[in-house]
Image 1 (cartoon, rainbow, N blue to C red):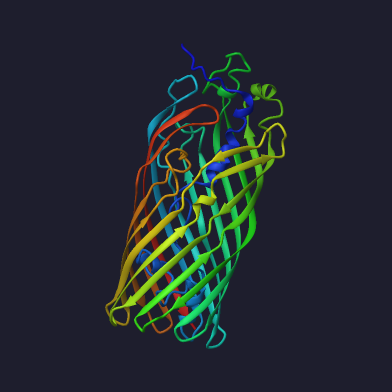
Image 2: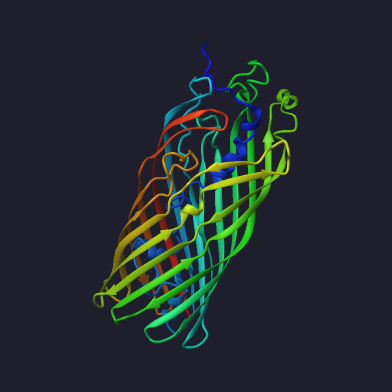
Length: 444
């Protein structure tokens, strides 16, 4: 057999798992681009978030535009939303090891998951000018899980990222037509990932070819978390009785993820690795990006309202990720992402049949920050097109129920790159998603 002239060296191969941690932080399975989640409002979901920062009657403005809390009326509001995200992603392609031989294994099955994403909001009117609010929701998150032994096992098995925001907001009405607001955000970000490790490739040269790629698989996992602080700003302007313009800004939040790396190594290989691939603490600096939304909401008449939204996410701050281990035998490593900033566009509206029933619908287009040269199986993201429907029912003067459905068409995410252990995976991920949502709102 003619060997590929590329020779694996032990030091670069040690970067394989830290590089996987970097990729995991950039994973998909969220319902906005990359790992951003927009599912914090069932009413908003039914309109594809058209008018997100300006439409009235939604207590989720605690996080979507704190200034708009001033428009929630004279009573307090408590609202609970539950979004069930069902996302499917399947790999079609193949791979080769550093000798040019096909990678063994299947396609990994459906790497997506079905999981609930809850949110809770509360507002309290202090007086005619001041309103306070609090919320718990997830602005970022994803989870993917592939079958053991799949062709891409050396890059990903399980990947999970979750950011939870505890938000405390206040709004102040400057005049009948203009309000401002602000938020303090405490954010907890956690990450967990696992993957197979190709010790056959890592040790092929040190053993003089006694071991070959794919002949000695091990296992590695990483798990960590961090708390950090951020802020939000909002404004609401009503130039006419029929038009509302809203603005919301959510700051970048800087984390230092601290956790533990755990490894399973075949016992006969442990002496060959020295002190490498032993359980060890690790850290990684990680930023959740800042984003901004601007919305318009127009009341046509007593029954029909329409709106639009433009969002911008500063993904270009996610250029690389450096992972440092306390084990000196496991050197620091950096992975490059070079993500691009993205835009989100949506239009939608609602039609009130009577005092109780409301129908909503919307369309949206969501750009991906990923680029072909750095996309990996942990980031099989593509541009997304949304289509949504929603319905609301006013039970009585105090209580209402809302439900929504969203379908997302995702462009294929192409992968073709070499890993730290010189494997090459080439193909595409075909993905799609659905979100089923329900909310209850109580005014008192």
